[in-house]
Image (cartoon, rainbow, N blue to C red; front, side, top):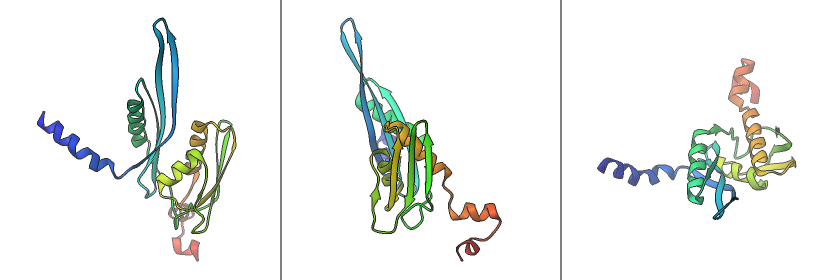
Length: 173
């Protein structure tokens, strides 16, 4: 028993490396004979502010349990977000169902011009300057998935140079 207590005591220090953002908390009611039964769903984004981001969706009968489940799933779904000088490397468009997200690099000092889920992802990933526009359906889950579609399509200089078979210095001149 003593071992598990030590592990729990040290875990908050380990979790401090990630920033957690709650994007959406939803309450649903199921009507039964004795009255209404409430359950909660939470959509969370986590990141280390150094280019790693993830999202998770958790459901439970308790708010804190739903958030905890979503954070656990987010830690398992981490992806790399390429960052160049505090912004993204190039303009990109992502689509998920009816939601479309456009991300554009911005010069230093612009800030994060984004709303809702896109802002949460960019802040958690460590991007400081970016322009974005969300088009189509505004469902927060679909906008989040469209943003992660953008991230999956993004390429950093190393992968482009490797695909072309050229050194990075030749690309940047």
